[in-house]
Every structure is written in structure tokens, then in C-alpha cells.
Length: 211
Image 1 (cartoon, rainbow, N blue to C red):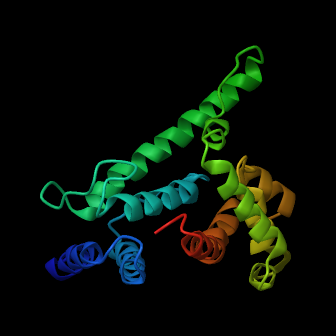
Image 2 (image 1 turned 180 degrees about the horizontal axis):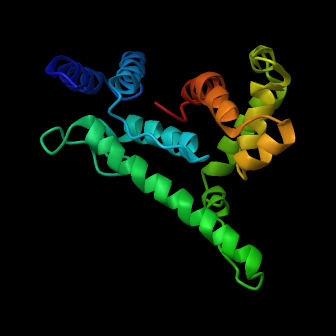
């Protein structure tokens, strides 16, 4: 990557943090930053079926810890570039998913082993149920009719509404969705990331769940 794109990412980080937390200006710049990071091709890529889920967690981590320390250590440009910082987090989340899959596989062969469900632990937190309930209500009612109208090309039965509902905790695994919808995991995950997740992110921002 040339010096100019690196400078662009650095400048966008600085610009985002120049604006107050929760402001429209910061959200706009964060969106530009995410787009620039994707275009830089410096973000770690993987072909695991849960890669898109780990990537979504990475974007949320970025928005919450770039300028302040909310869920982790705040980004420090003196230590690393923003892409190096995010790659470290992304790889940790991918490892978490690998371990979860391994635990689930082991539990099928050893039914007496009681493996804790990470999703259940998250849902148990005091402030999560209303968020999850409100999000599910928004998806199910689809007040503006947007989620029903976004359809996966050549798969008219797959809409953002049905996919978002199936990916809410406790989410249906991508491999199970692929078998159910008769569609490849990569096609489903790409559609989710490009068209469904942005709608979910807009809703979360409008409700103040995400900056």
C-alpha cells in the first residue's frame, strides 16, 4: 500500500475523533473510514463460513474503541496502523468462532459434556434483552417495507428480512441456512454483508445502540 492511502486512513481516524461521540459527523466519517479500509485490501481475509460474522464484530469494535475505550483498549496510532489494530481483533474473533465450532462438534460426540453457549451469556446481560427484542420487532414489522424489498438475485425467497431474523441470537449457522435455502454459504454471507447488515447498522444507529 502506498503512503497516500495510509495517510488517508490516518486522517480519517483523526477526523472521526475530532467530532463528538454520537454525532452525525462522526458516524459519516466512520462509514468513510470503513469503506477506505475495505478498499485498501489490508484487512485480513478468510474463507471461513463465520468470517462475515467476525468482520461485523470488528466494525462494531472499531466504532466503539477508535476514539474512546468502551469495549476494549482505545486505538493508539503511535503503536500501530488502524488496519494492524483491526486485524489483531479480527483474528481473535475468528479464533473464538473456531473454538466454538470445535466445542459444538465435541458436544455432539460427547453428549454428557455441558458446553456453555456464548450467545446465551450475552443475552443474559441486563441491557441486551430490550435491544434484541426491539431489533426483532423492527425486522418482523419492517415498517418501511425495505427489508422485504431487498431480495437476493435469482433467489426470490431470500430477503433481508428473513435472513436478518435467522441471524439474530441464537443465530442459525450459515451452513444450515445454505442447506435450507439451497444457496451457497458465500452467496448468502456476501448478500448479508453487502445489503442486510447495512440496514441493521442503520437501525442500531437510529436507536442509539451503535455510534
